[in-house]
Length: 239
Image 1 (spheres, rainbow, N blue to C red):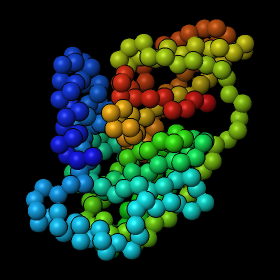
Image 2: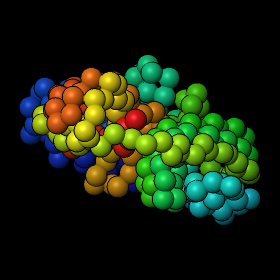
Image 3: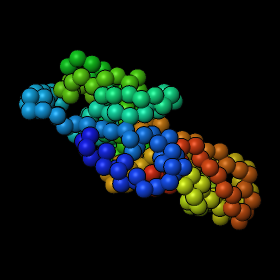
Image 4: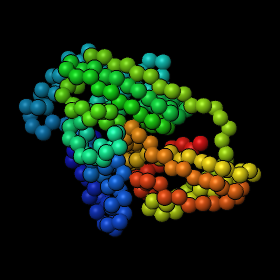
């Protein structure tokens, strides 16, 4: 993905209402943020290609003893929510990480050392088979893509019994949650992440939590998750 391609996403939704656009802007800057891996002139392109050729580790890089694979190291421009601030950043290192397993990964921690910098990436609630673009935890600038070492670890999903529920979108930032079980749900937590459907990956390391409850058997309640925008967000887990 390059700078121009992401800008096209913002143009494609220019016809939506101001309220909807505001909601979309509040989520991980999936529309107005950008990822760029393509150089803007002949000279930087040559430099980047030469650096790639000299990498000690070649992408993709599997993380040992996990189902995680590092697919790309890129630069990110946009709102930065890894620290909860939402401040605008430019040229921050970002990791494209894929969960190749059949179970959701609750937490992943990846450290990459390049020729001149160390980067730390934290990812939460990564669905099976999904890729997620994670900005560097401390908003460190990307200065090199020559990977010298890469390691990490992840937690595994607990095999707890869960209530039977259904979740459906009923508005731009509204979800309907129905208790399909035969017992009272006293409390429920939904986790959602920003998702770019056109590009096929999630955006951001953090997952937004929404508390729901209580819900009686057969009852439907509506919730308005923070930073949720229909078409740009997905519920990835509940407990």
